[in-house]
Image (cartoon, rainbow, N blue to C red; front, side):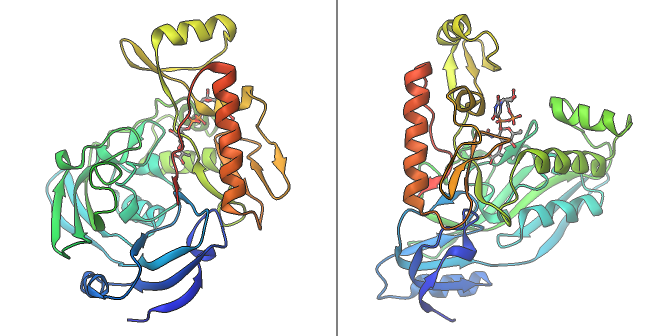
Length: 337
Ligand code: EPU
């Protein structure tokens, strides 16, 4: 194993923040991961997956372990379903494309989400009416404390909107090494209900879409709204969409009759944070070399050379402005390190 000292994490986080790790190692197998965990003499251990959902605000005085375990395997096939396993270090979008090429349905709406397979369950990634939990079967994870490998089934993961047990009760306790999905082989259950997908398909005159058509529509929508992290540093949605009670929402509607909302239950609705931030005047605003994306106010961007602290301060300013204007608290979705 190759443990390096003083390594820049810039290539390992999609925000492109130039923070340093005092020690860094990439692991390419579960065995290697276990043996790194046994290493003594480091300040602490810090796990890094695709680095697509974090904002580094300081150097990390730890042994940073980059999980780079590759491999995709079909593990069980029945007449209409397929269990497919991907190791944690596979790039999420490439895995989605692999499934689509093999005519396996269920992940097409999650095309082009940055990050790796192993970190996708942590925040139960979601987009265009689908969440990871809808096709998730189980995952294997190694305990950081004991090195023991444990399988978590879906119920044990406590999946919620952008949340799971790995972000709450077991935060920092396990490293996911592989994930199994249950996908459809026939009779794909297509989800085209999310407005933008239907419009995109109509534009192309597609009335009976395949999973590939849905994936292409999602890719086109994302490319038109969300910045490509390879070109402009970002972490996707910086904030979660807040869930507010219906009374508060009715009050909000009196002042802002165009406020969009999505029902959650009888007495709760989700309000798009992007809309709140736009109304607060931040959409497209730049502050030197960082700012708020011009097509989607939920996304904070690093045009190059910004520090994590600068972006964190901007996020606090946005939270304060939204709270003052609407009396709604918006919470960061990315992990602030
Ligand atoms: N909106 C605005 N201004 C903006 C952005 C959005 O008014 O600057 C309004 C839109 O007009 C629309 C509503 O907000 O009425 C929802 O917008 P959009 O469809 O873009 O979705 P979102 O709620 O802003 C969520 C996810 C995204 C995901 C999309 C599509 C969260 C925190 N974000 O965004 O996820 O791609 O839905 O399903 O739930 C991510 O997590 O990194 C991410 C990009």
